[in-house]
Image (cartoon, rainbow, N blue to C red; front, side):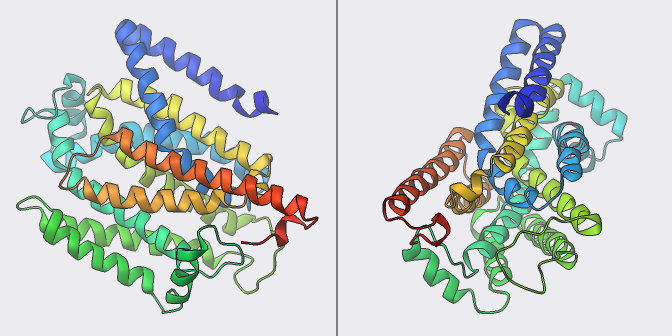
Length: 355
């Protein structure tokens, strides 16, 4: 099972590392490996959240997530997206943006590829931060039978009965970020980007829910999505993955400004393993056995959203972001293990164990 799920990722990693070595020698190989580990560390919570969506899709769409989805992740977000940002920000043609990218350059040197992308960071952080914040709010404001940190989740669920509270909170945070965090001359950029992040989440979520077979009824049975419903969930997954990758793509320039090495490390190695980990969690039914993992992942998302918005003004190391995310996941896993043992000792089914 393990080899079948991760075998492709291991093969891609080997090819990527060999390619990085041929392209830039031992230094390129080392940098690609470091970026791969960075991406996996930052995106572990992403894999857990992705698994909650992927488990509702059939084998065809799960396979599509690993094939077409990985192409989008590697060539779309890790290679094309930075080029697009630089091209739009600097008013460059695609060929000029590629030429500038191949020249590299320090993020603190005006006019370089790294500098232009770093200068666009407030807009990227506002978009991604608000998208993830709204996702987090939607989760904690929803009433659930099982809660992890009940002392805070249950009160939030009661407050969440107010209509459109997630949107109201996100709009309030956009205003605070623009007034308190935005660099001089970037307030409007932060507001516009934040609003676009909110609208993107609302639109994609609405389209996904529109075709959700469970939207008209409750129940605990899991219905596998097909057709338009599966496609909308796939679209939601891709947007979610793209949003998670923002901090990694921008943070990678603290390690190297070479777009090829970044695409290999973050995309071929990191993103491929994240996708395989997502599928592994689904096939092993891990989220059903360790029920608090989903909660831990969403709290990690909330922390990531706050940190991402904080980077509009402050320098926050990617290591801090990754450690906070992993800490929430580990705490949720340990809590799930303790819950399962108590339920087993008491002779109760896991799904009816106390919260």
